[in-house]
Image (cartoon, rainbow, N blue to C red; front, side, top):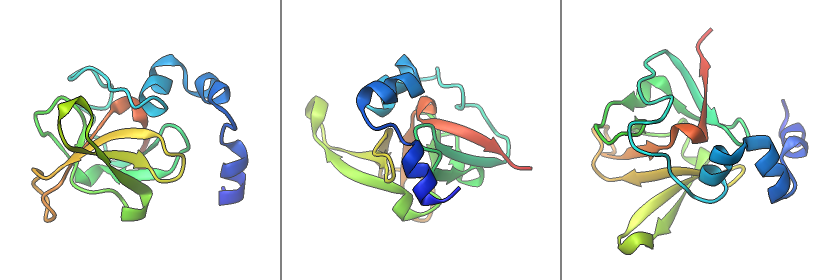
Length: 137
């Protein structure tokens, strides 16, 4: 699918987003909510494949970068491409964090922390509800 086709399929307003995503995904992706720890459908997924944005289908993370962080949310060492995500300072809730959003549709994914095991030392802590999983064929 071309970028032009994807843009045409993208909801034009918040009512269309709510209809497309449903209440829980809308709350997380469009209102920067979070799912309860240990509740996400993709937390224990170990199958090979690709994690894509549940809002627009943009590839975000590969399964070989997913690991068990003990945080209660799916964690990844890095995105498929640095341009796939946007990182935004988040000083809400009395602390400094870095929010992670889909660079294409601006959907809230989760946060990134500097305590990961990968070469860059990052942990992308992502809501399962923000992702769809595409198994390897």
